[in-house]
Image (cartoon, rainbow, N blue to C red; front, side, top):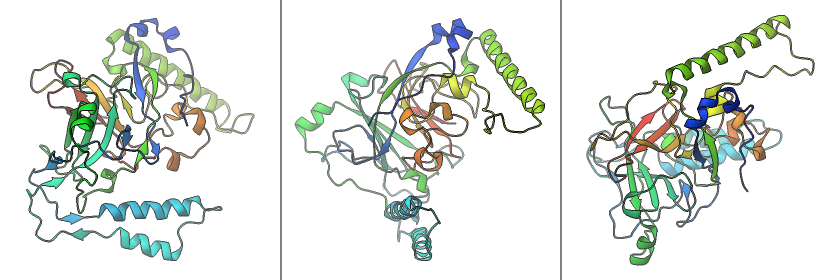
Amino acid sequence: MTRTTPPRPLDVEALFPELAAHRGTTTRLHPRPGRPGVSESSVGGPMLWPADEPWPVCTEVHGRGRGRRPEDIRRGREVRAAAYAREPYEGLTEEELRLVEELEREHRVPGAGEDDPLPMIGLAQLYARDVPDLPAGPDGADLLQVFWCPFDAHGPTGYGMLLHVRWWRAAEVTAVTDPLTAPPVPEVVGYEGYVPEPCVLHPEQVVTYPFAGLLPEELCERIYAWEEALEEEAEEREDGEDGEDGEDGEEEADPVGYQYDLSIPPGWRAGGYASWHKTDPYAMDCATCATPMHLLLTVDTSEWDGGSGSWTPLEEQGLHPSAAALPTAVVVGNHGELNVFACPADPGHPARWSVQ
């Protein structure tokens, strides 16, 4: 089943013609629960990995001997999903509550050392043939794989995440070696948001524009002034109605905004522009050659939410975000998004990332 982004609420280039020079594209991946195969693009699915190649591991020093078991996390999700699907929904039964409580227990790994090799979790694999906006890989590589450590225990703060980005020529992997069929998995994880549910992808290329703060200053100021004017008009209408619903009994919709409705779509996507709504923009240059990096992949907690509902695919209009918009079960930071960047001069240089 395809996923189709609705037309934007208005033509932003008609309002701000200068934006035409900044128009770009991004590929919304639209991950949805499924049974992806090793030869398919996916989130949380099986990776095309050579059987004789060491699996990515984290060797940074941090605690890894206490946490929740991945199989318990997935079983708990199944229990909750089954309860949510019942009509009418009346919550978990007493038996299910006891089971979920047991599944949420933390477990210890006896003898686990703080620098023992810890298998990383396969987060996503993208074949270039499926994703129009996937940036080119090094030396003709056409398969991108992203892994992460399942503990928030890295970087200067000791609470950051650690990624591993790997490129392959898919044909060479399948022609020369047998793929790995049973990859290693961590015994426990530090956070359930690091355990993705297997999802197939429904890639869709859409138009996108830069984060407002990265546009020319004069254009950015005009966009902000336009948004403020719309907000003031909405407040005046609300005051005039004494806060009551409109004539049709429905609440007045929020004003259209550049950030949430017209520029950068929410959800998982490849290429395009990064959003900097949490930290404001800062330099993301290659640590090897100092070249300004381009967005490679966005990993998002939700596919849409209350502020970005205009991006809800036509096929999913009316569905409640608490279930439909959280297909991967991945949670980034404080329910935010992860932007992974690659060097355009040499995609083989180490990736960088930012949590927004």
